[in-house]
Image (cartoon, rainbow, N blue to C red):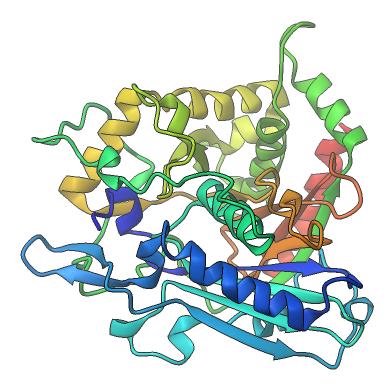
Length: 411
């Protein structure tokens, strides 16, 4: 199976955990049987998940060999109860035990693209831990996969038939780069030589991590401040991103230079932006990186409305032609996103809205590995209109970030 230039550079695993309360009609053993049965069935429409990544020596491109080698399925148990785990929103390193990482046990050549682990807890609750190669799904198509898995587990037909034609995002021939792409940087190694090139380096320094909660009340206040006219519409994502951006950039030691330019990156779904639009059911990666720039002086002085506009402009820039130009750039340069800060939003993906035969998850989250230049947005477990902002920084920068976070919130 052909992989697009967006898929090509995402050869790393994404691990998610979905927690469920106990259900008298569905003890964990029954759930495990139903999930295993559903996984077997889902590998027909999603046949690539049973395949293996291969480097095509002739083209130098990664592709999926749909050889039916299989997906992974694991059953595990824990002596804990769900309540003993504590706050599910708080990133817990132990959650990694609820997922099997394919690279732990297999050679690179035989790396599984999908592994599901069902872990039962002493209270009768359970967790689904799912590890998939990011080359297979983006967040939107992964939610569709979960909806289909849930439907099959309940003995129903697929909720959505996936569109597996990745050639819809093939580069043009010849490639035409019609825009500058400062959000992308060239790869220094051949894709086949280094299959796990990091989007952001994982620095070895010690990091503190903290969750900052923004309530629906905070949103109302921030949106009001960001309006340029009484009738202006301001998106929640744009206002949160602008707020985080200024706090992160100004917490760095380099921020004393007023002319230093900071670049923030964030993902944009290109399915509806292409001409013609991609099917909503497109199963591959159909998000590209938008960017916004501002100097330390602009971030310090604001106003917030100006920064929100910059973030909005980055999203508006992602037209059909810009997206095609970025894909063509990848054909020529084999690069990946590059900036000072990436905001990765899990906030509105809706994994916890997927309805399984035993109900929706109590909470769904990624297994978090801390990166100082990646800030994650999560939904709140109690209030769906609130958002949790996960930040990992060296302690001095964290102190500054926290101070700025509250200062700009109350300004």
